[in-house]
Amino acid sequence: MSIDPQELKQILSAGLLSFPLTDFDGQGNFRRGSYIERLEWLAPYGASALFAAGGTGEFFSLTHAEYSDVIRTAVETCRGKVPIIAGAGGSTRDAIAYAQEAERLGAHGILLLPHYLTEASQDGLAAHVEAVCRSVSFGVIIYNRGISRLTPETLLRLAGSCPNLIGFKDGIGEIELMVSIRRRLGDRFTYLGGLPTAEVYAAAYKAIGVPVYSSAVFNFIPKTAMDFYNAIAADDHATVNRLLDDFFLPYLDIRNRKAGYAVSIVKAGARLVGHDAGPVRTPLVDCNQQEHEQLAQLIKRVGGR
Image (cartoon, rainbow, N blue to C red):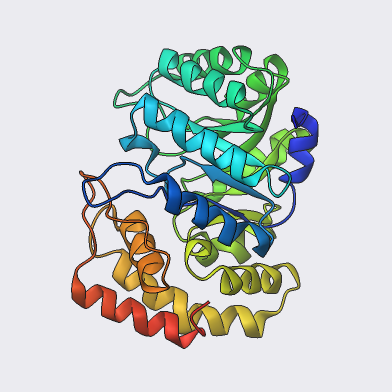
């Protein structure tokens, strides 16, 4: 069932979001069967939407054919349970091709990931976003991250020219910029926190009017991820602080040891709780045995779920 862009905006304005891992076998090929099992396991926990083939799902390492298989599988598995937002990115023509394929396969919208490699002016970024938005009719959420960094002025322009651009996700973490965007754009967009391990920033982002975020740890401790989100929503500072101290801050100590571990540590967590998604693909590398053991202790500390 299709979802109108404004309906999608409403869905994304509350609740917890997450990015399912993409399952690979020992040779690094997409493993459809366990991906289905993963989605069936996660769907009942209550996420507002799942982002298939997103950053945590290693969009950047998928071929076009694999991307189609991942999105098709996610849509078919989660139909009637939870909306599926597909990742899309790369060059403008690639991003359009991904977006159109996701729409054809029945996804409910896309998260427009950063373009590849080159720096770009605000005019060039705006033209890129406009081209993608005009190529599809479903909702588009833009991801401010890396070399794709839009200003409030550019976003105002895009808000006027792209009716189906309904969301803004921040992966930069500059509070001044985020406050400026939130104040200038008002309710035109739904706003999502998108920094790695977003729980650490959740209270601060809620205070500036961005209460929704995507959780990577939902992939292996979904109940704890939902408990943390509910504690943030209820201003339950005791629970928030306990989970930060017991899990999230020591988790960051492991995650920050190597570039790319924001994905690798999530795959390690899934492996430890019995939902192995296989190895990461290069240029990422997997966590080592000692890091697996340290993460296992943290998972045990929060009840393993």
